[in-house]
Length: 239
Length: 69
Image (cartoon, rainbow over all chains, first blue to last red):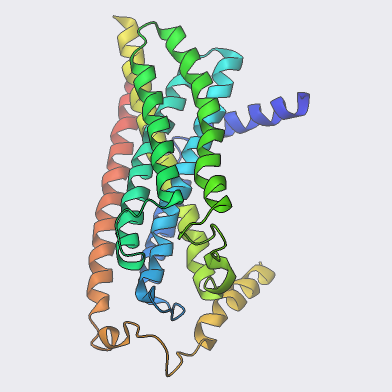
């Protein structure tokens, strides 16, 4: 327990220290440039039905990875808020969720467009799609709940607890339940994931940098939102 | 460092080795032979560059405001 809290504290100070630094933002942009150029131009396996849309793997899946990254950070800050009771951890947590919701919508929309041309319809009531929609509402409820409480500390505490519970439920809805039933989505319900046949070395060379690049971009946007929020908070508390 | 470079070289080598099979599902080979996919890539790169510059400038303005505090 002692070690875990020590690691968490170190991680926290690392995040706070690197937030305004330049190096990882430059790295993010380089990764994204590489992803887009290589994602369009490098070779991909030839597959029926998928054809060139297999390249969506470099763009659709990283949206979910980006969402997941900021949601994990949000849970981290929520736990820290409950531990230390610092207002700024609550602000960090909610701004991570806000950024995550943006990438959530992008993930849903890109998934729908891809589904239209491979599964035949934008929305076919697939377990993966339905679960993703339910989990989306779960996080909408988080934001509504949060905004409905006026008292600052109560709001922070209740939304931190809600957030910590919402995260595992979202994971189960999106990544576990579709695997247990029939789903068209790759990697679910007996469908092979891309890793099985299609994700050969050429695709891995683009896919992993794409996952890292888009995740870092989401973190970057979240830090900007958090810093703005912090200034707003300080201005409001001075008045 | 040498090991790392060698690893990167090996990882990338499969790109060159992978030959396009003659028969199989139709891919965008024709489209590419006309050479215009690069136009799309260039446009997306411009958009990304614009967004990156935009984000960096927001970041810089924010840092300035934070310093004033």
